[in-house]
Amino acid sequence: MQPVLHMIAMLPAIAASCLISAIWQGMVLAACVTLCLHLLPETTAAIRSFIWTAVFALGACRA
Image 1 (tube, helix red, strand yellow):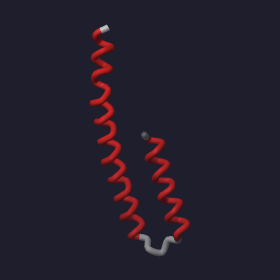
Image 2: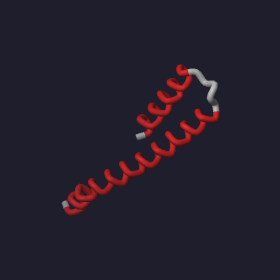
Image 3: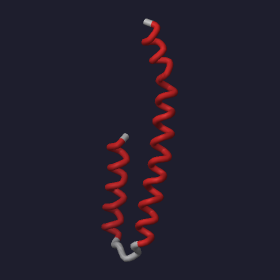
């Protein structure tokens, strides 16, 4: 019974660690996409929208 209680007590710490990791990884991904889109100024709004949608889906599915 003790190992189960110990695992339950560790859940908030594990969740916080995962949340912090997801935040910084999402920020790095968004910064990279922003930089790439600034280097390609001739892209259309439709292409930029598709790229951002794909980045969002990648981030959401990874989590």
